[in-house]
Length: 184
Image 1: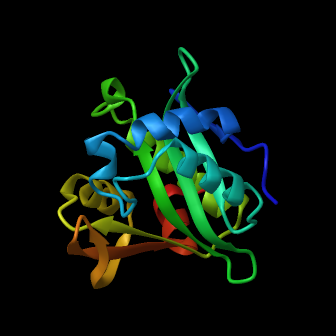
Image 2 (image 1 turned 60 degrees about the vertical axis):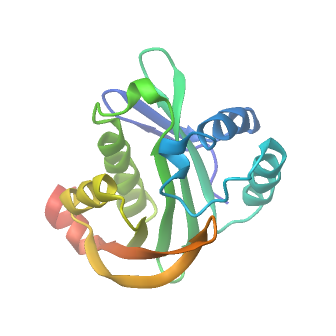
């Protein structure tokens, strides 16, 4: 099991999530600008977030991390990796977001992604990392494209939210693509 993660960049620390972080996840995941582009239900409450956190902590295919702003050590976002498979050398970036509004639009999402990609490809030695973007999430799609993710296709009507079906756009990055773009 992967624990005690600590990734560091100029402005951010990404560390293993703790139980105390659940209160932040609950607060952030109630905000429209966070939940709008995720498949999570709008009805999630603190108890469900805690239950999910505890179950994920004992599941070796899931990695939960919290993004912290270095200057004041304030938690500002979340990273959630799933389907981690050492044998297949693959995983999904299921959630990554900045949850504190005053930290949006300052490049911390990109800085977080660069740290996560370094961790995935250099530390975990993953061959393939995938993610999906919600229909209409142009800002996220642009970010992932700019980082080097390749769009693989559309998963049509693959999620349902508030009674409506939505498409998800599957993207991935391979190990050699990462090293070609970012070196070692």
